[in-house]
Image (cartoon, rainbow, N blue to C red; front, top):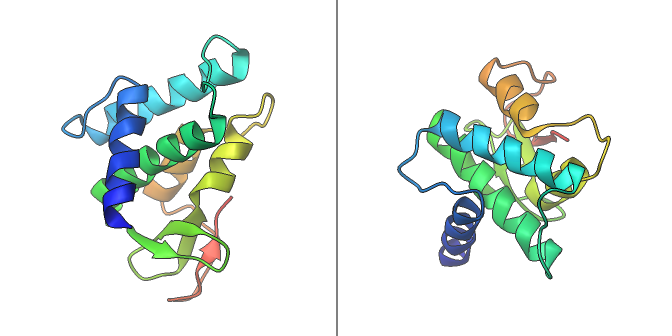
Length: 132
């Protein structure tokens, strides 16, 4: 499964014009801009939007791993990424499905910055509270 995640991450980064060596902040900015363009119709996800969203989700998750040590995990309903102590988790595909909708009010940068600032709901170790 890890090889599939790595491939999807690489394709997600390529989709936004980034590479794995780019600074985390640069990748987050590019992801944010790309999703905004999808929302306003100036960028398309392509024929298989489901796969495109998963690629973008993997690219985002890799930035959480690089910046904060989050790890890939299985959640009750999907594959996601969890905080180092398991207090919080994100199911990536559903998150990106919501983010890509016009007028969702939810952004990549907002999610990333909330994690960076530890502005998250209270949760105990290994509680896997879902962030959406």
